[in-house]
Amino acid sequence: MDKEAFTAVRLRKFVCEEGKSQSFLWDSAAPGLGLRATAKGAKTFIFQAKLNGQAIRLTIGSPNTWTIPQAQAEARRLKVLIDNGQDPRKLRAAVIEAELQERVAEEAAAAAKQAQEQREALTLGKLWPVYIEARRNAKRRGGKVGWSEWHIRDHEVVMRIGGEPKKRGKGLTEPGPLASLRDVRLVDLTGPRIAEWLAKETVKRPTQAGLAFRLLSVFMNWCAANDKYAGLVPVGACQSNQVRDEIPRSKAKTNDSLQREQLAAWFKAVRGMSNTVQSAYLQALLLTGARRRELAGLCWDDVDFKWLSLVIRDKVEGQRTIPLCPYVAHLLAALPRRNAFVFSSPSSENGQLAEPTPGHKRVLAVAGLPNVTLHGLRRSFGSLAEWVEMPAGVVAQVMEHKPSATAEKHYRERPLDLLRMWHTKFEQWILSEAGIEFTPAPAGSVTLRVVAS
Image (cartoon, rainbow, N blue to C red; front, side, top):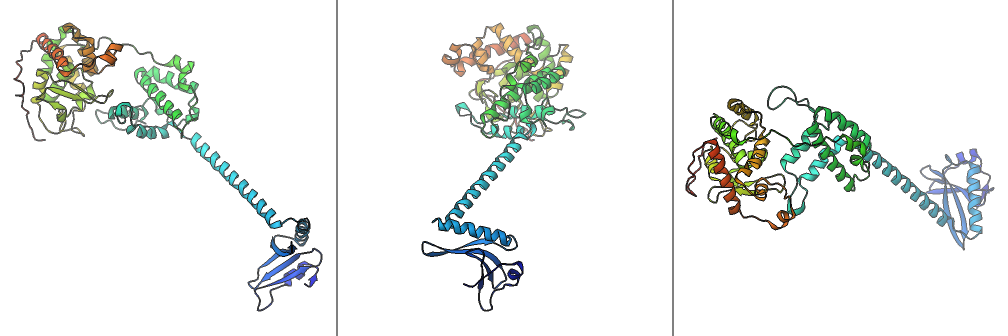
């Protein structure tokens, strides 16, 4: 091979011979260094030598990137490796592999850092709807699925932004207790931060603040148990001493139930209501001990007039079956059957009785009675049941209260007939105290009143 000294001018003038795909120019200073020129005009520094009797060729780089001294130094380095019996190709492959692994590791570290930054940027307001949807259809012990719509609504209300027109009444909705924490990152939900929030909310609305704190505490436990969000919420934030000092102390509500001597006035005012659906609903609340939303959601398919039972969709066990006593059966049978709901309303969005509280307040005013909430009617069931000496376990089973003793929890399973005996006795006593004369219809003779919607 003819060799000559590499100069910038010589390299610039060197071109591929006509009729060939590539031509080579060899350097006289650095053994094995050459310049390859292709028919398309590309030029590249190369190194060529023999290893174990076989010719090998490696690409060094473009003259636009490598200077002549740099290319000569690289050629000499490669020549030393070959003289030592080493294959530069394998060494280069190892270097490339190491660089590739390093680059992959750097990219993985960068991706992990970005993912962690995105995780840490998660706010309470962003993850709250995700949490609700995850729990909506989650399977629970006993084969039950997800939260009830009431429980979901509680979670939505405590987080609502507010400022929207009220569906009932005038004005705008208020922000929920957790609204002020919507934009707070989960990593910033420390004990002091939660204690500060709880102190402010407790002053304005202690009951709602207490509910919001309980929901927040369960949410944070869910985050800690979820691999995707584990480690974001500070450990023990809701159990810190600062938070415990600010938790509103729950007090048993007093004077929120009807007394025996108030029954006559209350029933007279309720039975005199022009809205028969509300009238029946309020009386059924007192006589069944059901929660207000449980009873409002009662459907005709849940009522068995033949075997005198009601299926109540509750927030604790999913559903329970209680007796349908004669007077309540009489009230329900007289109601218009407009749609699937027993306590229906032609004007509400979902077709069921929407807000009976204003009507009940008018009843109390007419009867000259102090304020009793709708939940107070449920309390009244529990307290008035003592007048007929109804066993506490029967009261708890009808109202769906948690058993208060081991025997009740594990060894008492009362049949519906036994519940009906006590429940009917209670209903008869209530009617007697209210001065209502009622003759029960023969079993199985109750008919429904069908009214077109």
